Image (cartoon, rainbow over all chains, first blue to last red; front, side, top):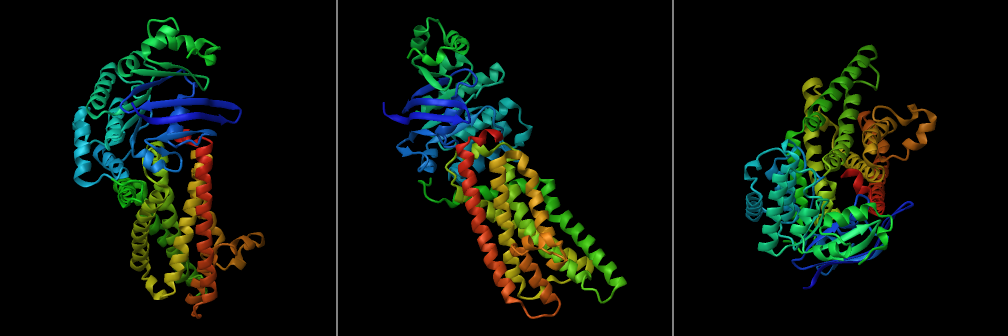
Length: 250
Length: 267
């Protein structure tokens, strides 16, 4: 399996705080990877560096052969991004917002309409197409965000807390839509989440971060076993509570 | 799909998104209709009152109306681009946009196209209002309007770039400066009065502003003098320099924005 995303030695400090401290991360073609850790572990900062929204102090990011920051635009053509905490633009109807993002991926006209229709259908929200984005519930916004992220059929889908604060039925719909996308389109996935059960179902590899470092990188079963737990939930709780977490076991 | 080249589709997507918002944004329609009309009524009335008391005054209706009509070039050019960018920050859409292939130049051009169209709409309102309410024909000022409008438009865009730079650097709390900048410029540019009428401490600042030369040229022509090409030339050069400096500033602020992780302020 070739590597679609390769990040080496990522480091980022904000004043006196080291948010990310020498992170190496790879995602293979079609691979589904969960990036896990407690609040403040450095997951979001890492994701933002992978997206080119934050410049690392040290380290390199290569996406589908395109180096950041120089080839950021080309690299972003291969990535779809959505975050559970980000709304879609107010004052636009869902279809208008999706057309806007399709345009940003240089998809226009009929191809855009087809991609929008397919995405809305996949996540079963075609009935929301003419609704204003600021009228959507948080679950509906998340689903629209996923449709947005998949409009250009990216090779890699980067999701930050996609199911945070969602009802279980909506979270299930999100997971089913993602599984369908990954299966049918061969899309790779890099997802952060606090829902360990969801990650165990969705991801074939998990990367645990604590205090800005990668402390475990393996299959969910192997990571759980390495920490002496039956599930990732136990690992998460141990790492969140353990001051030695950054020393790691992987 | 574009393969990393400049993309007109992406540029047009930015413009089209702004037009879609404009259709539903009451405050933006106020910028285009109510404020221009109120300004015309207010300054026209003031000019009419002054003329009633002193028929020889140069502060009569035509002088004040020409000033406010042309100030709206500066205002509309600035506000369209600055609030166009703020549309992304108000709706916490900045990270969504940054995580796409959109290039900075494509975004800036898309915003400028929208800004130019909105400026044109605002100018229709303000010139039409001046004619309907006070029978003031802006075109009577002649061809000198062309370089004066260019100076004001470029300076308006420069102020908008500066506003965007401030927002990137200082976050949403800098929004107030966006509006403040334009009114400070109005006060110091001598929109209605010669710079000599300003407090002495402000006069050196006024002489640094390209807008000051534009309004001075306007008044000279209105007073029946020959077109002061020296003022026009200094104003044009100053506006180009201001636009270039503001571009350097906003590019630098974008680098700071990425270095310091300020995107999290808007997400």
